[in-house]
Image (cartoon, rainbow, N blue to C red):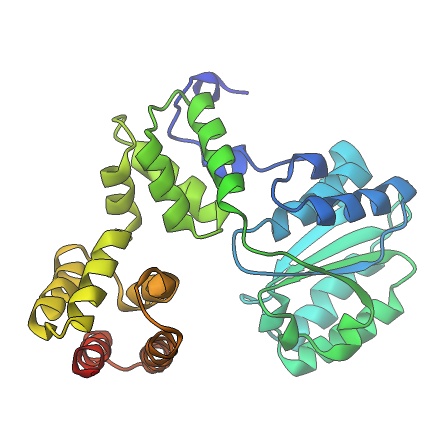
Length: 324
């Protein structure tokens, strides 16, 4: 460790990598998955694996931890990581994966190929991958990572042990960021922790990056610092905006929306996500909540397809204000 790395509160190192768990036992929030993976490692009987789940919940960390525990200090020599979203074509399957799989090696029974964002592979590339998995099954194990397992063809899924990673619990995120803050000698307030947990929404990567960004100035990491650096709207602001619309005051609700987009720089799709998370916090009956969810879904779809986010959000608020 360098002298700079040894200084408490050092801001130069990327904390996401510095505090990435190296052992399966250190992974938080996925105890059942960790237990099963540890059993594979203990028996040295690793099947092909498919990790499915949202971003920042530990899929890559689990894959690297498996390699570390199987191969020790030399794990890099027996572990190939590829990102399918960058290398989508069939050539990467035919060339890089096959080249690594054919390379001679000693001392281990098999090597690991970790294919991140495998759901970004084309159908042809996935078909080629399936054939490659069959061809090199004697000396290679594949770990595939994806956000949506439904985008992985059935022949690949049937060849893998499937692990579904859920968003991390608030308690798991809370525990980890408090541990990092203590280790880095950062003054972190309770409302700062709550803000980081809210902004992360189960994504540990987002929580750690938000903590490091908020701590750069060397000041206290509190609620204000977190919401400013993560470009996240305060939940009370979202509630106020929707409540004004539900009360029929469209002008005031639109003004609050304008503050969020223009003054605070919150992206439209982020506002939609926070609206969705807040639906059940309003005093709505089931029918009204269903209508609100339907309108949120419509706005989200249109924004995703390229529609103007301000117009779509204003239309959403207008529909709420006109509701009898």
